[in-house]
Amino acid sequence: MDDRAHRAAHRIEGRSAAPGIALGPLVRLVPVKHDVRQHRSAAEEHQALVDALAASQLDLGVLARDAGDADAEAILSFQIALLEDDNLAAPAFALIAGGELANEAWSAAIDPEIAAYDAADDPYFRARASDLRDLRDRVLRHLAGETDQSVPAGVIVAADDMPPSTFLATDWRDGGLVLRRGSPSSHVAILARSRGVPMIVGVDVDHLVNGAEALLDGNAGLLIVNPDGDMRASYCQRRAEQSEVRQAVASFSGPALTAAGELVRVMINVTGLAELRDIDPAHVDGIGLMRTEFLFQGRKKLPTEEEQYQIYRRMLEWAAGRPVTIRTLDAGGDKPIAGLTQPGDVNPFLGVRGVRLSLRHPDVFRAQLRALARAAVAGNLKVMIPMVTVPEELDRCRALFEQAVEELRREGREVQMPPLGMMVEVPAAALTIEDFNADFFSIGSNDLIQYVAAASRDEPQLADLARPSRAVFGLIRYVVNYANRSGRETSLCGDLAGDPEQVAALLDQGLRIFSVAPAALGAVRAAIARYSGSAA
Image (cartoon, rainbow, N blue to C red; front, side, top):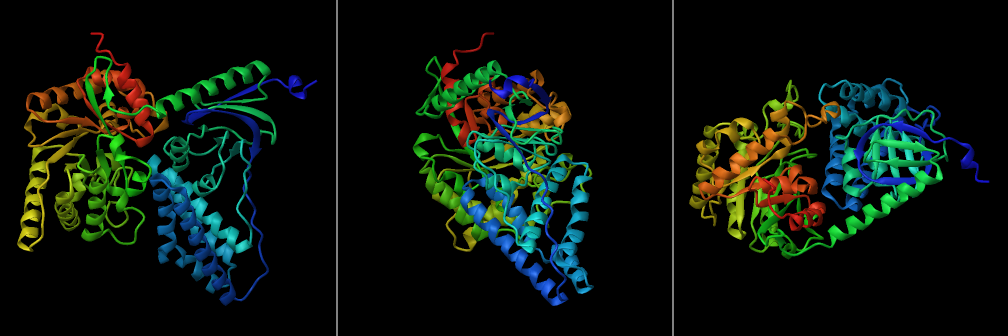
């Protein structure tokens, strides 16, 4: 008789971080205790740390290259940038000069930084503590001559935490992830969602037995240890059904038409050129949002005008005449940039971010506007300004843009002034939309929802509040109706646009331009095809 029949099923609740279902044996990852080598001279310890830092940087570069997507590249670039910063390791080298072993000196230098991130009020910064632990442990492994932990495919991994680099180096086919630490906004959760790996957080993993059969329901935030036969059969059926749905929507291409034959434009959100490699521009209606802040993150120096121009131009050439909407730098909030954003912002989401930051750094803003004006010659470019609250902000941006165009023309450059629009994500702007001199509007649902509900989108405890409400849909309808009356376009580029369950509600508000993550294209087109009109 199967020994599993003698063990009762045990249900453990956590918080969902990535949807999906996995069934397989549990593999418990425990923190590795790195070997302490015999004492060497200070010079040898110094060189050992130099070598370990260099090897770690090489590791991360290879992982970033092989990952092949913008999320992974952005996450790993954060660690690479830390390794390139001499200030990070300086305390460790000072301790080595005083007689400490390299591994002890490195830990002593990094652990206070990790503790500071762990103690931060902002969930974004708390989530970055995992990246620092990852970096600390990678260097310690090199100092001890150890290899990375290996995880077999088809298992459910249980751990206190998982570093992003370990996640990226793991074969997740048919597997899942259960963590004690972390949150739905952590880097590992972002990676899990982008790769379809079921994941839950907030689970006491100490009593989980290595090798025990387990069923992970990422949708419900549930782990079932020793599931019985009926449970396994039910969940296997659900997993098969979900796989069929994913395959069906992934194959859905062509123009997006409602059941009544009305055309709806579906564009994509991107962070850089890497995401365009496997996308045929003929299969989308353009780029509805290019997030330029990812060009600025994880670098020692901010990108130059020429660097930005080359990237913007190549995007326009890829689109082959289709519209490309590039958002000016939206730094701040959950996207800090070293040397630019304010590290001491008491409330980053309500602080100096978006256009507020750009207008306070005119040299940085001017370089971006010049690059955009030069790139506009290469295709159908539209530029939008984030976090606009009052008309004067947009007016100042337009004036600066026009000045940049005139400067370039005097320099003999070939330039063009593209249409200038605004993100509608601040309720005050949505309620007074008729006061803004914008050529088009793009609704940013992520920020609009959190500002309407006064609930941070990165706080797991407020997840029930930070979701679309009647108030949010009312603002969307108000903006769309005004834009239609005044002959201007309105799109929606937040996560709400990529949720198939919300497509009908958005169409009911009059929205006819969606911009979504490339992975959501099929599902959103399929949802549009099912739409037969408002029931009202």
